[in-house]
Amino acid sequence: MNRESIATRRSGGLWRWRELLPVRRWEHVAYLGEGDIPLQRAPRFGASLGLSNLAVKRESLNPTGSFKARGMAVAVSRAAELGAKHLVAPSAGNAGGALASYAAAAGVRATVIMPSDSPAANQVEVLVTGADLLLLDGLISDCGRLARLIAEETGAFDLSTLKEPYRVEGKKTMGLEIAEQLDWRLPDAIVYPTGGGTGVVGMWKAFAELESMGLVGSERPRMFCVQAEGCAPIVRAFQEGSRFASSWQNASTAASGLRVPGAVGDFLILDAIRKSGGAAVAVPDADMLEMQRRMGSLGLGYVSLETAAAAAGLEALVESGLVRRDDSVALFDTGSGFKSEPPPSAAPQAIPNDETFWRERVLPGLGRG
Image (cartoon, helix red, strand yellow):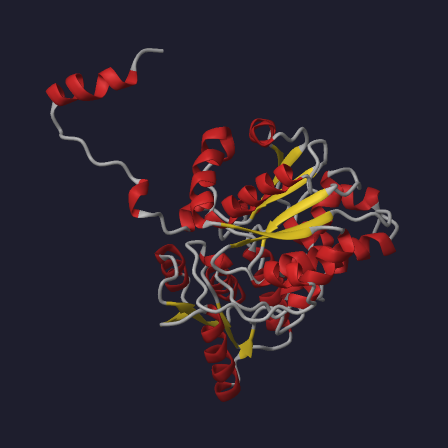
């Protein structure tokens, strides 16, 4: 593989990088169109943050509406190639929907365990695509315990985050794509909303592989992880100087993908942050909600709360000087807002079906132009 041969591959999504992925034979690939996602320039939003060179990696455009499609596409394909017939995984939402979709494409059974307060859209996605859904009164860590029990007792294969080696291989394609999209120069900074953190681990692996192939140099982006104040184990460990992150008690945030009290790959995430010269920051839920509206009004569409958290974190990083105003920055949009659970106040009150009311109360507030 070299720059020229990669450039000739105009289709195949993330499978354009097939030599760097674990699936051996194409007939085992469950392909729904994942990967090859735009790195969108965002001058209006960047200007609002004081940044001159901001781009947004639009992972929400993946087939299942989030970056989770990448990891599950590769993990499910490889599991099917190795003979697995039943897959099980815990999920805060998007990973479960992706697992269900790719298991259906591969023709294997899937069981998804979600916290009972997971977004309804994710629950429906799992059911519509034919997987078994178990809702548990607890956090994703509790769902992980049930997934392990199911795997042990039934022989199902456990696809939990970093409990097998292939989801991270799918996630690393985000890093491969960014390098190609920036003409084989990596950005100065990557800002990523972090729950389980597999994307950070995968991209860090991707950059090392690209360097070993001679496609990029030794310089690395500064990796910035953003978490919610109500569940920030990586941030706490980073601030304390620890290589491991103790479990967060009473985790609470409206961003379900960030409600991960303990990341299996905590030390890998923290290693990448520190080696890159990056940092980990936490933002309150109120900032996420405000940023979600702000991003939409500045032309970035309806992003997820996780994406909004990353953007709020980026704003704090700029204000603190950790991200410079002339840095080349890649901000990750990890999921569509349509899969979030909107707050009750998000929708306006309905107006009466009455033309007099429209003329007296509605039109005056709209003005002309």
